[in-house]
Image 1 (cartoon, rainbow, N blue to C red):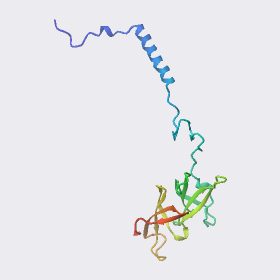
Image 2 (image 1 turned 180 degrees about the vertical axis):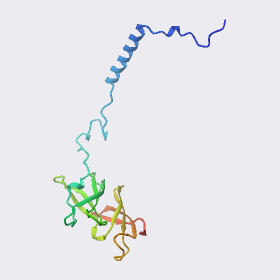
Image 3 (image 1 turned 135 degrees about the vertical axis):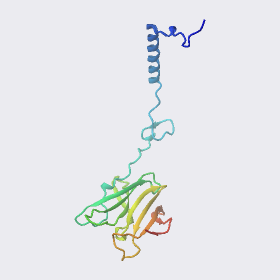
Image 4 (image 1 turned 90 degrees about the vertical axis):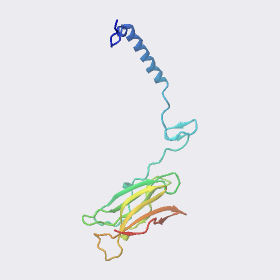
Length: 196
C-alpha cells in the first residue's frame, strides 16, 4: 500500500469546542496583559518616586526661549526684524536652555547683514531677553550655518576682506565657535578664515 503524498488531515477539522477553547484562551491573555501594563514612561527615572516631570519635587524641563517674543537691538527703520535661523541648548551649564538666533532686517532688496544673539529667560519672571550679541550687524556678516553643540555656539559666517568688496559678493568665510567662559562668551575660531 502506498501512502499519499499529502497526509491525512481529517483530525484537523474544527469543532465548536475548539472555538470555545480558543476564545477563552485569548480572553485570558488579553485580561492578563491589561493587568501587567508597565508604568507610564518618563523622561528621567531616578529613584522610586518618578513623575512625568522627573524625580519627585524636580521642576519640569523648561522650554528654550522663543525668539519671536524678544525685541532685538536692530535699527530696521520701516521694515521689521526677521529671525532667519535659531538653535537651542544649555550654554552656561545652569540646566536651562538658551536660544541663539540669527536675525536681520527684512529688506526688500539685497542681503542685509545678520546679527547673532543669545536669548535667555529672566530668573524672576521667565520672560525671554537678549543677553549677548555674538555678531553685530555693523560687522556686515551673514550666518549660513548655526548650531549649538556641546554647550557651544557654532556658526559659519560670510564676510568681506575689505570695505571695497561689494555687498553682493562676500569673499571671506569663517567657521566660528563661541563658548561661555568666566561670565562671557569667548570666540574661538577653530579654522583660519578662508576666501570664497
